[in-house]
Image 1 (cartoon, helix red, strand yellow):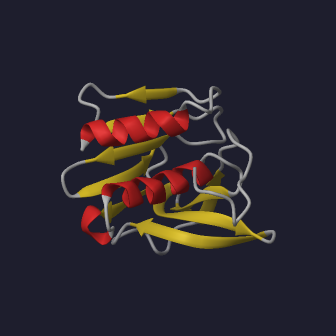
Image 2 (image 1 turned 135 degrees about the vertical axis):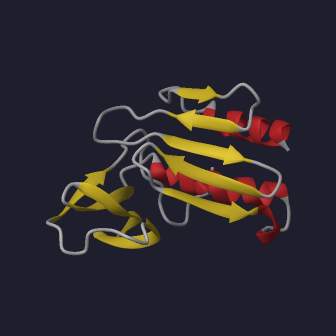
Image 3 (image 1 turned 180 degrees about the vertical axis):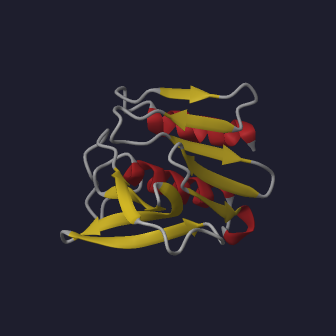
Length: 151
């Protein structure tokens, strides 16, 4: 599995020379580093049962490999999301209470409107605190058109 994902990821990422990409020692984790402080690192991890997308601003999501027909379909789906996370058509909104993050929302842009794609949050947080939010957005790649291929 590790060999398959590394080969798939390297085939896709090789066409984007501007990306700063690193792999961990056992090839189970690839990090695509942010270009500036307004963005976020995107980390893709794999184990025997799932693929995970993590970020350095604490958003995370996962997919069970059994949800897909095969590994190729899983890789295509996950790296399609990663590809979008590296463009300005996706952003992470971090909701805060008294400057402490409590919810992370992955959003995509559709017809100039931000739509929630996935949400991660804390079960317990200061409901009565002063609320604020931060937006993190990468601009590594040109946004894909909605009907465009996932690679």
